[in-house]
Image (tube, rainbow, N blue to C red):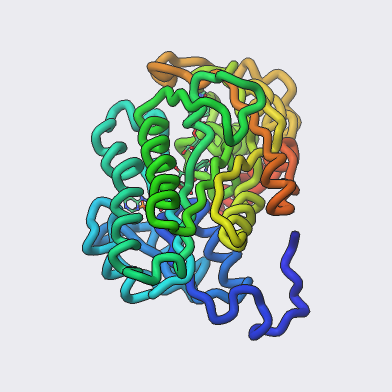
Length: 342
Ligand code: NDP
Ligand code: GDR
């Protein structure tokens, strides 16, 4: 699945093609931008806000990306980004993505994560006019749409029962994407991605919260890790693998929806155990405290995905298993903390 570096720039799969990515400052945006540049694409990104601190990170990590100011709630800004980039492929990764936050800001989450998808689709339709089938669209749908589990493992046909304002908003975006495909013949695909993580994961999400805390505890910089529900189970994969699946979806002749997952589920306890084990601490209970502050009004208890359609049609398979992922993240946090000492 890795890129053949023997290809000359002109024969790279993305040569002569242009992609526009919303959410470029996020975890997936950065990995996707790197992947698309390596494939020879001209890459454009939408950045929100007048002084976004993460803009510098994008400029440092992927300096070849051309940035446009825009917001998913502002159609004219999206139209400007579309007209400046004239993309062949649009990847809509922008969202308020933190599930816990979505209860505190339900209306804002609906505006950005839900209605923002419609705003993007409509902007694309206005921009492309009669050439709509020439532009391919990817929507970042989520396993959170499955919510209260109806079937194990979850697949493309599983009933959706979202359990948070975030999940409900993603369902809206998911069905709007399908609706634009069916109504206008648009090449619009939706990736139902299960949790995916990396050293670039935001520190509010549980994997990164744990790996950073474990690194700090190991270095004597912190003495406690405060968590919520330790029994929830997630199907965690590596973000670098998952952006490859996004790209593969848009290379198909027909647009469709795909579950992307490892097929293996672990609890938060497993995550904590592996992270502490990796730094040589076996009795992690002495460092971990549970606080109801981190419990959610409605929890998604367990998620595990069936990615057999993606394997069959896209030839996609995850490369990094859960243990390796957690160890990679702890090592990256240790390295960053030690570098900060210099
Ligand atoms: P991040 O939270 O790391 O990134 C979210 C991105 O959305 C940021 O670039 C953020 O920009 C941008 N954004 C927020 N609000 C707006 C807005 N109003 N207009 C335009 N952009 C906005 O998420 P990930 O990279 O982890 O995820 C990417 C996408 O995939 C998201 O849609 C997420 O919901 C979805 N997803 C993620 C999964 C995962 O496990 N990571 C699994 C399934 C789906 P800013 O710098 O301005 O904050
Ligand atoms: P999730 O990710 O809600 O699955 O959404 P998160 O890492 O926030 O939570 C995973 C599970 O861990 C439990 N948990 C805690 N979570 C956080 N953040 N902090 C804690 O202290 C804590 N303690 C226990 C949670 O209750 C939950 O069960 C992510 C996001 O990337 C979404 O955008 C994406 O759509 C889904 O993954 C798939």
